[in-house]
Structure formats: structure tokens, C-alpha cells
Image (tube, rainbow, N blue to C red):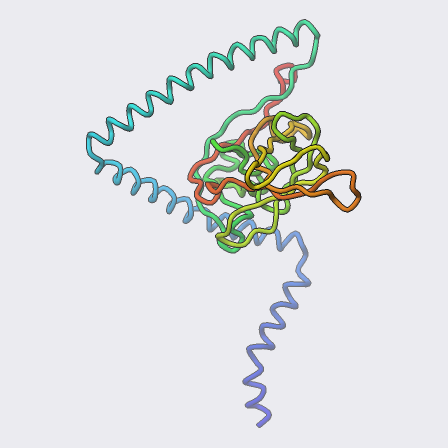
Length: 279
């Protein structure tokens, strides 16, 4: 009878011993094992990403000529609009450089834009992180801001040889110094607790008392540029509700994030570069 009970409890004893052994393993070895597992897994995920791109390419080859002509016209209109914006941006940059020379101000550090394809999204942490198809091989660094056409995506949390992990702006671990559009007073933004597949939201604190928003009249929340991580005037989301906090000095509330965060295929990493004087 006793041997039979021992046989039944043997799997649980083995599991308990394995957990105990893992607890006493040094943290450095645990981290090395985790990084090694991620690096071994990365080639499979990257290959699958390239296969998806190839499938998308051949699916586009099946489009009719009329669809391609319409797409070409739309692209030409966008290129014309972007050309005007580039000329305006060039004029503003020249004026900024002139003022820096006149006032003898130091040139701020810039960014190098590095586009990257999204490899996968972790379903266990849907609104927390995504993995991109570039890493140390393209000079990606930890802490670099990540953006897309709609604004802020998040920041680089971990960098590996050929991939990198992006912590999304919807993650509670992301805090950003922000401002309401048209205002210069700082507001603190933080990602919220988001259910899987549900709409992504964040929270704001230290909102001035004279700022009023509602679901019917939201207000755009943008990066302030403070802290030196994100450039200013990038869209974070839209404030849909603010209420006075317990101290009565400020307001706090909710921020609605862009739904396209859940379907991103490509993002841009802003890799910090030193100012010209420091190179």
C-alpha cells in the first residue's frame, strides 16, 4: 500500500524538487538561461515573419491593374503632401539652426529612424509587449522610443542579437511626461490594466483643474519632450474622462489609445544619436 502511494506522489515530489532547485539557482544563471532560450527561439519567429511577408507579396501580385492604378494615384497624392511637409520641415530646421548659432545654444541630441517589422505579439500579455525583427545587429538600444504613423508605440525594453522587445504604451510599466494639446503644463501618463483583446486605455494624473474633457469632447494627449526619451508633440491618445483627485489640487482620468496598436505590422525605432559637437 505504501509503495503505491509513493508512486502516486512521485510526480509531485519531482516537480517540487525541480522548483526548489530553480529557486536556489543564482539570478545570473537564470537570466542567462532566459536569454539563451529567447535567442534560440528568435530564428524560428523571424523566419515565420519573413514567410508572412512573402505570402503578402504574392497576394498583392493577384490584384487587378485597376486596383494598382488606384493605389498608385493615392500614393502620388500622399507623396505630394509629404513633399510639402518636408519643405516646411527643412525651413523650420534651418531657422532653428540659425537661432542656435545666434544664441549660442548647444545642439540637442537627435534620433536615427530605424523601421522594423513586428515579429509577434505575446498573447499572454497582449497589451504589454511586441517583438520586432531588429536588434543589436541594427544598433537598437534599450530605452529607445518606438513610434508609428499614429503616434507612440512604446519603448525598447530588451535587446537581443536579431530581435528586440517593445514595451507598449498601454503597459502599466510605461510612464510618459505629457501635455494636453495646446497646453504646456506637464501631465503624467501611465499605461493601464487592459484585458486581452479589449480596447486599450491608459491613465493620467496631475491634470490642471481648468482642463475639461468627456467622451463626446475628448482632447489629444501628446508627449511633452521632458525626460529626454520621447520627442515632443507625439500623439499618445485622447483623454476621455478627468475628475478631481482626492487632494483637490489636480485631476486624474482615462486615456483612450489607438485601436491600431493591436494590429501593427511595422514600427519605427528612434535610436538616440549624440549631438554633432560630441561626435
